[in-house]
Length: 338
Image (spheres, rainbow, N blue to C red):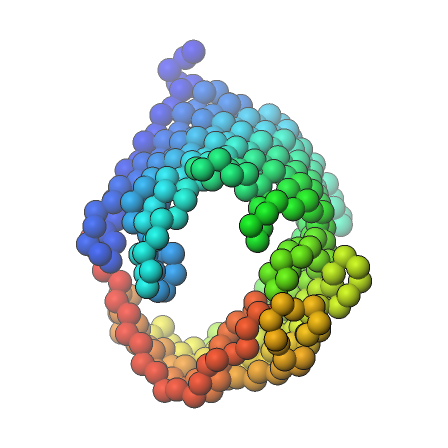
C-alpha cells in the first residue's frame, strides 16, 4: 500500500480536573484508503456524574471501522467502559458496560423540497460488565432536508431494553421536524409514541410525548425561547396514568459582551390517576415559577450570577412536585486553563 495513502494521527489531550488529578486521553485514526478507515479512542471514564457526586477510576475505550463509498456508508464500533467508583452522599461502584454497534446507510442528493435524503439501519447490543443484557435493538431512520433549512426525521425502534429491573420488549416511533424561515427564527417539534416502563408501578405502558420549541433572536440584544413538553401515559389495558405538560419561557437581554439579564418563567400541570400508582399521589398539581438572573463576565474565565428565584425548578420529568422555594442567590464561577 503506498505510504501516501496511509495516515496515522495520534492526539494526546491533557486536562486538569477540579480535584487536581491529571488525566490523559488518546485519539487515533488510521486511514487505510479513500474508502476505509479505523478510529480508536481511549479516555478516563471518571468525571462529573452530577452536581452532588463524582466518578473516579476506570477507562472508556472504543474502536470503530468506517466505510465510505460514494453515497453508501457503513460503520462497526465496539465500546467498553470500566467499573468506576461513584462518590457522593453514599459511595458505591458503578458497573461499566460493553457493546457493539453496526450501521449501514445510503444518502441521496436532490432538488426542491428534497435537497438531501438518507436512510440508515443500526443494530445495537450492550451488556454491563456482569453480563446483564442492557439493550438489543434495531433502529431504522429516514432523514430529509429541504428549503429554509427544513429538516425532518423518522425513526422506528424495536428490540429489548433493561428497565426497572427487568427486560422489556418494545416498539417506538419518533418523528422530528424543524424549520428556520429566517436567520433569526427557528421552530420545531418532536413526537414519540410507543412502549415505556411506568416507574410508578413498574408496568409497561403506552407513551405519547410531544416536545415543541421556538427560538427567536428579536435583535442583537433581545432573544426569546419557548419550549413546551406534554406527555400522555396509559397502561396496556387502556387505563389512564398520567397527563402532564410543562411550558418554559426565557427572555434574555444582552447589554454587551460582559453583562446580560434573563427572565425565566415555567408552568407545570400534572394530572394523575391515583388508582394507577403504588404510592399515594395527588390527582392534580400545578406549579408556577419564575427566575430573574443577572450575569456578568469580567473576563472569559470568570462569571458572576445574581438573582431571585420564585418557586422556579426547571424540571421536566413529571415525576415529583416542585420543591423550589423563594430565594436570593449569588454564584461565582471560574474556569482555569493549564
